[in-house]
Image 1 (cartoon, rainbow, N blue to C red):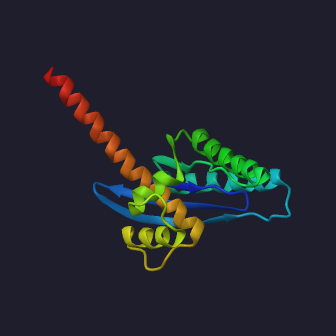
Image 2 (image 1 turned 180 degrees about the horizontal axis):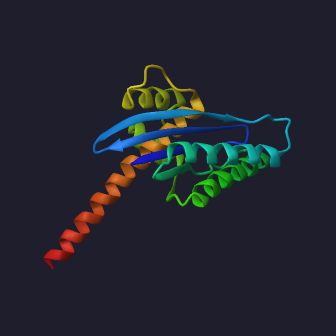
Length: 171
C-alpha cells in the first residue's frame, strides 16, 4: 500500500510518500510545496492543490493521511492553515482516495513513542524508520511521519477488524 502523508501549511506544505510492504516501510519520495507569502491566499491554495494533484497522478497512492489543525495562538494563521488543510483533503477525496486525519500527538506517538517529541526527534526517527541517507527537511519529515502513523494505524485497524470477525465467527 502506498501512503501519501501531508503536513499542511499555507506557506509550506510538506508531503511524504511511503510504501507499506507487510511490516516494512519503504521511502518513495518527500518534499515541500512552497508558496510565496506575498501571493494572494487563493493563488497559494491553487498551487498547493495542483501540486498535490500532480503527486497523486504520478505516484498513484492508495491512501492519504493529513495532519489535523492544531490550535494556533494567531487566529489568522490558524484560518490559513485550515484552508491549506481543506485543499489537501479536497485533492485526496477528488482522487477517490481514502483520507485519514491524525493529530500531532497521534503522529508523534506513532513515530517516536512520545507524544511531545521535538521536531528534531521526528526528523531523526523518520530517517531511521525509512533508512534515509539524510534527515528530511522539517515539513517533509512531518509529512513522512503522518504517513508512518497511518501505516501503523491502518495495520492496527486491520488487526482489530480481523480479530472481531474471528470472535464473531466463534459465537
